[in-house]
Figure 1 (tube, rainbow over the protein chains, first blue to last red):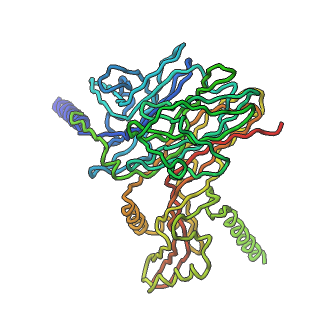
Figure 2 (cartoon, rainbow over the protein chains, first blue to last red):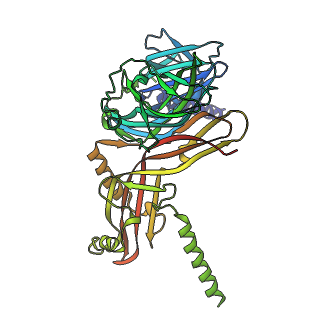
Length: 315
Length: 212
């Protein structure tokens, strides 16, 4: 009987220590952040779009990176007046890391589905977007992720027009590499003339300046070329609205440089766009899906220092 | 006689194998062309005299361990990479391509070695030696690097009878030098080596009509 009491007491003590350790783990302060970027997505009416955000944590095993602990997620404006619900697909550890405030932050890729289906055009534009993550125990974090734009569209492609060449011009603005121009070639598939009236970038903070687009030849232009060598008057934050009128002759092909302008410096390496054109007097659109123009491994200390790092003391 | 023949065949195989390993003009697989933007030379373009001058610059021998001389330390360069994706649509309908490039599939770094040092020189050269030098360079540029292994995805429509090609160009840094390894003051291994580290990748999409 005495033995049984001893064993039972031992088990109770061990369970107590285990619970204490678990609680201690949960009570740790965890810091997290994300590089603000210009996020832009296009999705056909009947399709669920997959979107991703990379969040950096100073701990590799906190509850914030546990898929099972995440109850709900939304992307929206900071006031939560406009919210788009998201469905978690997975949380995957990446190999990305950086040092800030004497700590190592490691990347976790949060992949979501936007479950929104529609039968008409829909658009959400958030110049200041926050990712809201609600964990078990009603613990919620709100993470600024830059800007966000999402559009439901009828379909990609066009029966009349075709993008035959696509390349980014990438320069540093404010210490970070971002797109300053897009070199794009179009081919007219028809026997009639096509007039391109506008090229709209899918973004809340980035605009294409089709009215200032310049015609290019077939020469090779390295993507790292300073855009001012091609467009001496380029100013990243000055956007001049103006209609374009780029003529594409019957079965012809042209190459242009589209200046990319910013209202807020959220860098972008991936963009989708819409081309508005006239064919036989009819206004038409051509949607081009997100294209990754570049990836970069170098981040300036300036950009890392400017990161908003939040710490949750209660978790 | 048989032993000599086997040894000779093995040596011949090793020579063929090592020459097959690096075929690109730059000497680095996956990088057909590398151009150093400032001062500096790729190992491929150095003369035997220049490499010999590097060995001489190593100075007095050491009792044990490695000694390195750097020709270039993290100098900026540009590169033209291989075509990473090509697809032909020979059907009569537009074809939707859903492409995912795992960055791990494409080289982040490329080592090239010459001489009696092993192909695994990167592990044998003291990490601290290289890290110190490369970090010093990074400090000068006021930048901080970290590895990005993100996925690159794109969905694109390929028109009937068209070919679509995705090519990578970009920016990289080049570090090269010569090293000697000593045991009791005797050179046990020596060789020249070069490390190319990718910094930026630019993706270019091109389509062209194919002959029917």
